[in-house]
Image (cartoon, rainbow, N blue to C red; front, side, top):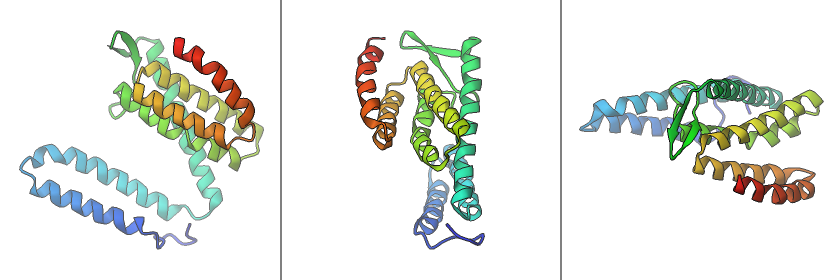
Length: 193
């Protein structure tokens, strides 16, 4: 974390632009460069976002606020997708109705489930950062909604990521013994359902 708006000496701050240059050079040298440009464009958007985050975050409080805002945005995204699912927007694959994300980037059920499952480990981090009861209630609701949405996508990979994320959340909890027993009791019921 830096006090000024500049890049710290972290090696990632130099490795990611070097990788971006390699991606750009490979796309230019590719025989199928037309097909590469969407991937290059998406990568450079993520790189720009990364550079904004590492130059703007100055202290722990800024990082806490950013993570809470991220989880709030994911929760709104899940609520919108859940409302669309309830109104009939889904894909029918593998013999089941599968929830999909709103928009183009997470429209695939597997991509949507992976996005949610990869956001799940941020919940215990933010939980420890805030003592406010309302924030913790929001985090419990967001985590529950993430698990529900992953189950509704029917994504096996998303479910495995979600199970790993849930195990990590239980592992760092101070109630890990009680939550572990509850997870072992509920696990077979979820498997049958």
